[in-house]
Image 1 (tube, helix red, strand yellow):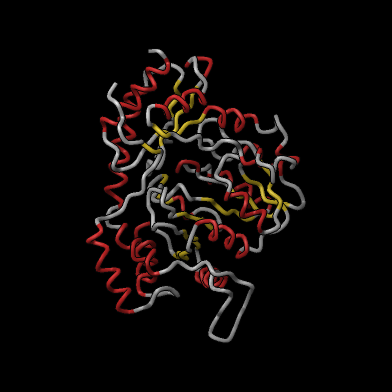
Image 2 (image 1 turned 90 degrees about the vertical axis):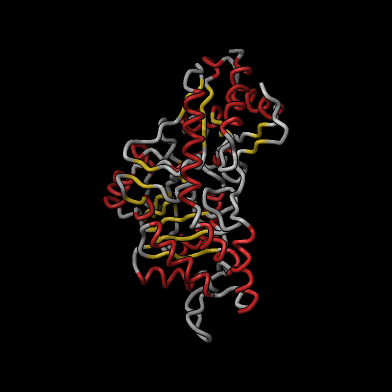
Length: 375
């Protein structure tokens, strides 16, 4: 096996050539319009709507503030059904809005919220469902909509992994009452930090835009208790430029993901997640499931051994959100109530995947996994 000199991280931010970004910076310096719905903010919003195939987008300084605001915009309260298998920001946004999270188990194939388990968790206090498109794999949006409609519940999708993802030729961002995106540095598409809310009508966009700007409707009128969550011109300008590269980024990710699949498909005890039928993935992550009984080594053993070979994988998502101190005392978080999520969190491992990764480096990662197994 070739020695890996520089660490291979689970992800690495794509940045365009600096010389291409410089004219945008010069424009900002000349105008001195740094934030508050400037030129690039408006250009980025319009370009995103066109690229993603959505009607309205509200830009944010990060995805967490977008999620916090989405809950405020829909006036969500009481209890919200959600997944324990996500990044903690999903549930933290509920907690910060004084909303009680109710955890429901995930599907064993997609790792998304299991629609079959939702109705049993609905109570008189339930006001919404907050599913996550995990690793960009779409939730069962039709079944979730049917349940939400029957029980008159709102649906907010955490679509932070789902930039550009389509199902049946249709963007997944148009499902639910709102969808929330992240443009964090670790994502397929980044604006350093950043985020957005996708909404479906002008009145909701107007409300969200008020809420993210202190509640100001005009210079002297405050229509609600808003916060400061606006995207600045530097982020927006980078976003405009990044859109020129995103198709190539996704193509490169696909090539790398296919190389991983070809390399790992014959290793007993390593399960590869399949892209669902009729789905256009963004290949944002390459997760594997390590079955200790078949592979002969635990996921954590593989994780530590890879690290010693300069391969920095990540256990996304471990521990489960429901096992963190703020949430582990909740009734829905009790051990044994989330068997699929509990098992997956002990076996999941995301391998390095980013546009600058080479096929040779993918081969090295796979060869290392074979050596760990002992061939």
